[in-house]
Length: 242
Image (cartoon, rainbow, N blue to C red; front, side):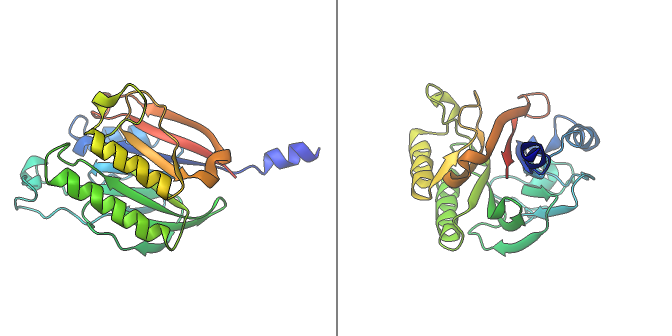
């Protein structure tokens, strides 16, 4: 009887991420219809446009990319035919309790949440907005390292989520920006006592990095949409238990 009661009160949480490739491969309505069939607690979209995902109560944006100007090599307004561009958007069933400053607010977003799994910060990011083109990839890598170390100094429960353009699985070096970026990220995870919960997903470059203290809470780490069905990225998620 005690075991049954404990099972009934078990809390699970799902965190997911997907690069939607600016929603160009499917129209926004179809992507919305696709995503809302999944019961995620947190969903981080990268290379995103504003989707109306009704199963999330809260929605948080990084800074909007400026309209009608060339911004880092591209006029996004023309490219997206008038759609507003956001490199990261975080959808949540939980309210944000604190917003942490970041170096580049048009690429990164750092929000703190209080949940039954504890008080943690989700750092949403893209490293390689132009893949391996310099100076962008180097700046984005260093921004992430700098931001995460600063956040870690005030809250060690940091979860890094987003498009890292890097596979950490052995034998998949061709799915990574370059060896230097991979090594720097691995060192960052080590220094901040983090583990890559999605490391073993094959041919995957988007990741969810969690504190090592959450290791025993992992139930699964899987793909929820394959590459080239919605965008040119896989959509991945993890499930954690309390």
